[in-house]
Length: 308
Image (cartoon, rainbow, N blue to C red; front, side, top):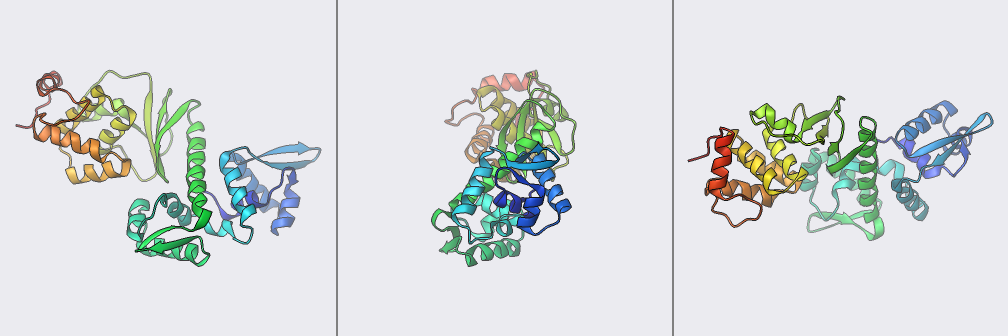
């Protein structure tokens, strides 16, 4: 996602430094620094200006750059480039409130030993502490979580803009995001979801002018369980909830897997409401759900057999 050398450049660069000046400051070759600066330019974290035959490096006005440089200035004794890359960035991203090692491992899909190693390094430097088995930040180092979140969001936005000139991120995690666009995306790791995806499960709905995509390197195609969650994230209104009910009635889904995904997307209560609605034939006290007889008519229109 971002390399140590790139963070070293961001921590060191002053407005107008040349590649050679940065190379001298960081004790690297000009060619190595030039590649790192090129990667940062691609990420939108710095830009370059020509000054005669020299190229000067300028930090961008991205909020994540300001957050990071403030941390570096205020805690100059801490080697942040060594602490916030790779798996550490994932751990920092998930420390929005006190969490156990197991909770962080589950959220980041890492081994407990990996999370333990990261947390030990952070604890040894006084950045985090433990209370009753839960890790949390010490002092003002909670800003590391803010930095991790802002960096991930910035990089996701860059990924989206590289394939769609107009797009909006509706939901994101440290390694995935759900996006709305006005154009089709045909690029690696972008998987179509939303109303267009229902057709793969035998349900054809009138499409809107927007398209929806899940960006994920770990997913081959959007499952019915994921589609249900994405639909609620896209629009939590009565019509889209009815579409989810049709999908859950039409496709055999594992409820445990569905509830696991609901937790990932922060939709536990909404998914539970949909499942109870189907189990009780509409006898639930919940907003934005149809009357049972109305849903029966809708299901008949789409040739969906409801549970007896």
